[in-house]
Length: 364
Image (tube, rainbow, N blue to C red):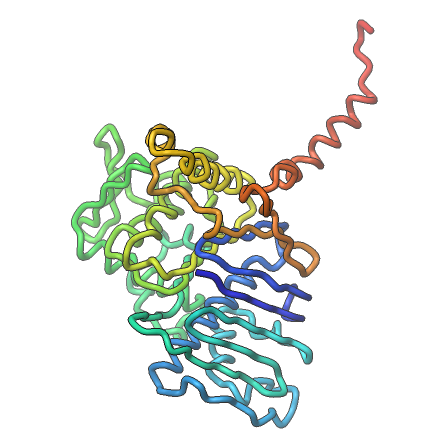
């Protein structure tokens, strides 16, 4: 499955034209636009579901807005979604947005508004996007009742409220969660979120490490039930995690997103972590090595479970900087370019080399 996304002059993104595949990684400096890209994709997918429900697929909004201030008078649902994701001020006079895959076509600019068309594909059901925010670290400290608030009643982003609601539903419907990635169990008992450690000691979720607080709700939601969406965005998978945990989380996410009910779902991972890139490269290389023959595949499976392998045709990775996206996957090898993997540490290495030039050992 593949799609094309074009973004021009929207927030920090100046000129982006990328191919989106099953598994996608966005890496780059803070404020470069990784989350903007992911949120815009979520909005596009949410537009699909909204218009499909209302029977408006194929409708073209041709009436231009009366003035620049309203901007979206010909596309009110789009405006509401932009507000929900806190990017409503990113639209500029020359903003252009385009998305197309095998299921639908989306195009937006201020002159025309939205052109949105469903393609005739049999036996395919598309649903809206699911955004798992970096703010999930705050979830253990927020009361359950807050997640019942509507967007109009809360200043919290709608996607965060939805994440909180799903967490409360999951823990109500399953007594005990075994979470080997975190080496703990979780249960909601007597109105409290209890984490059971390997020594059988129990702690309140808010008393555990930041890594557990950030990732336990994520794993609970992904474990039960099978969350259905056409696009999953997980911000900062590395959040508060040691490199080994980052790797384990990535491997689990890839495996989970191969569930039969999620075969047609895109996965987007905005990240700052080079470890996520390195771990992804391992999964790409495992799949490549395994193609040699069955015996080799079986041996590779002992190193990395085959359920987590990534076929290079299903993977893309982009470095987001200066309003643009640069592919960091080598077309010849299908792996992430080694120079790109090393580039993150170049500044540190450069500083160290410069200091070595100044360093004069006492005994020299």
